[in-house]
Length: 255
Image (tube, rainbow, N blue to C red; front, side, top):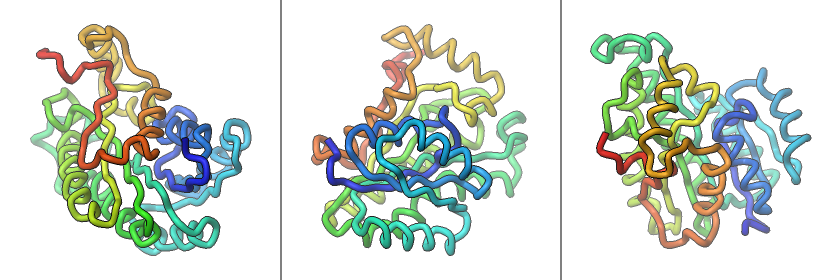
């Protein structure tokens, strides 16, 4: 499905992260990958994961998305290795623990800024750097959650950040569409990832979603990966500016 395609995945931290499930799906689909992690300390673990799970050896690069010079360095290395870019996956989000555990009303100014910069602005930053390498068009994907549209207890500032992220998807889709670049988001149901465990009472999210979703179950990371594979492929060539729900139908529930 992606034979002859190359692309970048941002946000892989471990084998439970959604970015990693997506990387595995894209690799199985035939793509060559560059995978980014937040810092140098994550690289050894990422190298072990890649060696044991991926069919094609990826380019592994540490990149702090709060640093413009590191973003530029990532794409310089990418261009030197692969040339063109066919797809870009943004699976990056962060909020301070105290801003998730406390009341939303008490979110600090710095905590709000940090959540928006890491979770939202980073998509603009890497899309801006990637667009010149997508001369033949391409696909940009980010990850969101239903807390952008509904009040979810303890999701707090991250829900506001995800709402901004979804708006950014629409604006980027509008601007990049004439270049043949599609921009979409996957709104995944709760998956037991390391970052998700930072949300207080996360187990209740899982239980509630499984009990009320039409399919009466939680989703798996592989289902998110398969959807990303579709969105990165030419099968989705007519889709842009969309939020694709992969949540066993939970978002249609009235409660």
